[in-house]
Image 1 (cartoon, each protein chain N blue to C red):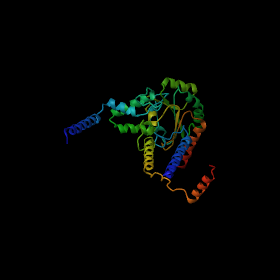
Image 2: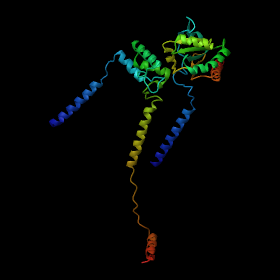
Image 3: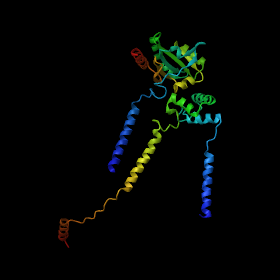
Image 4: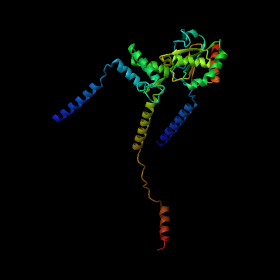
Length: 152
Length: 178
C-alpha cells in the first residue's frame, strides 16, 4: 500500500474518532435534563410549541413538575411516562415509533419503500418487444392494388 | 406489475378514506386518550371556601363529576346553569359534583362562586399539578368518575345538561348492575 493510501485511511479514522468523541453520551446537569425533557414535551395549550419554549402558565407548571421529578431522582423515561399517562403519546413532540402516533415515522418510510420497489420492478421489466412481423400477404395484395389504382 | 400498482393505489385510497371516516366520526369534545379508562388520580386540595381539604378519597364509592373551571373563563360561565341544574337534581344522592379551580386566584374564584350562587364543593389547584395528572388542556373540562374510581369519560369545552345527565346516568346504571 502506498503512503498516500495510509494517509487517507489515517485521516478517515481520525475524523471517525473525532465524531464518536463529540457524540459520546455526556452526563447532564439537572438543569440541562429539565431543559431537554421540557423541549421534548408539547405544551397542551399552545400551537406546536414545546414546554421549554412556551411562556404559558400550563407550560410553567409542567416545567416545575419536570424539575421536581428530576430532583427526586426519576429517570427521563419515568418523567416522560408520567406525562404520557395523563395526555397520551400526543404530549411527546416526537412520538414513539411503536405506537399509533408512530405512523408519522412509518408512513413516509413505507411510501419510499413502496415507490422504490415499484421503480425497481419497472426498471427490471423487459422492454416491450418491437413489432417485427411484416405485412401479411393479404395486406401486401391490397397495398399493391391501391398503388396500382393511383393515377400517374 | 401494473395490476400490483393498481391494487396498491386502491388500498392506499381505501386506507385514506377509512382514516378520514374514523377521524370525522370522533367527537372532538370526547378525547379518549390519556386518563380515560384508567383509575382517577388521587388528590387532596384546599377547599375554596374554608380550611378543610377536598379529596377524591372522601367520595369513594360515589359517582364524581369533576369540573375544571376558572373565573376568567367565559365558556365556564356559559356552562354554569347546566352544572347548577344537575347539582340541584342530584344533591344528596350517590352523585357528587366537585369544581376544581384552574389557574385562578382564590379571591377571584370565591367572588365568582358567590356571584353565581354555586354551592357545590370547589378546590384550589394552586400549582396546577392535579390538572396535569388528569391531562387537562384548559377550562372548562369535565370528567366522569365511576363508583369504581375509574375515569369513564371526559368532556372538553362547555358542557350542557343533557351531556351531564347522560354521563351520570350511564355510570349509575353501571353501578346498579355491579
